[in-house]
Amino acid sequence: MLKIAKVLVSAEDIESKLAEMGAAITEDYRGKDLLMIGVLKGAFMVMADLARHVRLPIEFDFMAVSSYGAATKTSGVVRILKDLDRQIEGRHVLIIEDIIDSGLTLDYLIRNLGARNPASLKLAALLIKDGMQQVPIDVTYTGFTIPNEFVVGYGLDNVERLRNLPYVAVLEEHLGAEM
Image (cartoon, rainbow, N blue to C red; front, side, top):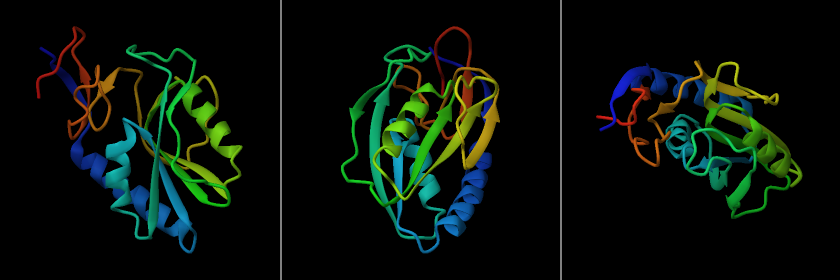
């Protein structure tokens, strides 16, 4: 059975930070045609809750990319599992991510989307693992910087489980989580 060792970011802190990020996005994209792209699966919760704080008409699309497989660390090899449903040329695109650790997958994704000629391409991320970036990533809207620990909750999983926790937590060293 999985057990939560500690909560790193509370549900209340997440809600407050997303409201702050949403207000900034509203100001920055006022009068622009905004398309939010969520990186599946983890970013779906961040994107849904963040979008509720953006006071503008928004379109949504999703991509699924993988560099992890069933591992807990990136392999460095990126595969697009689901591409966008619409063209982004000339659009103002905001990528929504749950967490940035090495940055390798996101660097690939940014280069891939940038080649499709959007009017602008920016990034919002709820979590950034401190000191883990192997490539520089420019994050316009940042939630929290966290220590280099394996985290679950709020869209982040352990073998596809625990995404539904309303907070971000660290599991006890030996597998499992009790909710």
